[in-house]
Length: 153
Image (cartoon, rainbow, N blue to C red):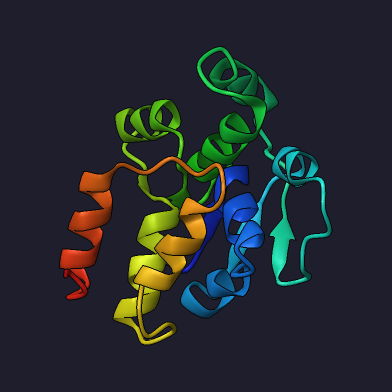
């Protein structure tokens, strides 16, 4: 298990929208985010999410030429911490993290991990909730996720 997990805004927002933000704490003990992400989230963050500043602001500014400030700050912070896991949903941010040799997952990965370790009993109800939000997910991805979690019809 990763000792440190750094979340971008999208994962926080989408899990909050479906009333499942606490899944993060149950799946990953130590959740960190940046002030930029906290500002983008624009709601109260629970006390178990630690807010940490990026030290190398120049590097963060450089990353902002590729991705938005929340994603850039999360990626920059990940480069300053040993062996973190990044929570990113945006494809461009994920590609950038991959180029930088950072490990990442997204909201669907968090939900899958929650099922694997018994935090939730099924992914299907959460996928149904996600589909009621502005979270974009293809039918193919849904089918693969259900199959991966032994919930395929």
